[in-house]
Length: 210
Image (tube, rainbow, N blue to C red; front, side):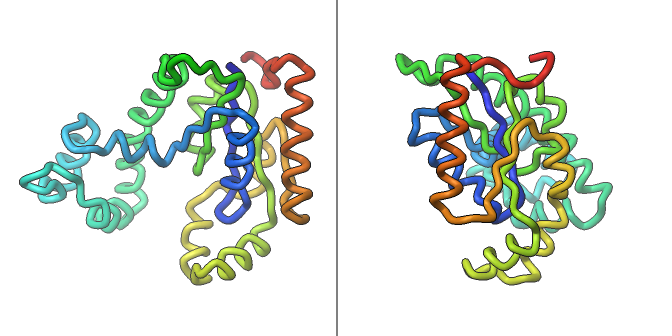
């Protein structure tokens, strides 16, 4: 199975590309969903985070993690944010690796798996799992305008964008860059062309050493 890490800044169009690849036949994995799974009640990661940031983060009846309170504490300083990542990221990477090597698809054997990666710089240690890294690129000013048009405040966008890898970093680490500066039809045309090229090439890995 050909595995793609799909990345892009907030409001870049990454989810649109992922949805179209899924429509074409790809198996779609959302890394945000995996991050939620590793923080479910009773998981080792949830317990480790509670020990580090306070047992009162856990609901005494359900064991559910109070994520809003956790965010307040974990992002108070860079050191605390780094600690949260150190506790959470290994579990996310392990869960992703398990998913990619398991039979979770049952009888269905997809030729391609697209993994939506919100923070590509946090997944560098897992690059060996990907046959190709694809980045959806749109300049930050246009992304900000687009996000505001969808109801997000400019301040909220700025905070979120500041915590993501820069466009330059993403492009530098991409094997393929899909531009989203045109129309939706132009974006989807690039996705279809990418899919056709990989089919014709027999879904061979693009990244060296994979």
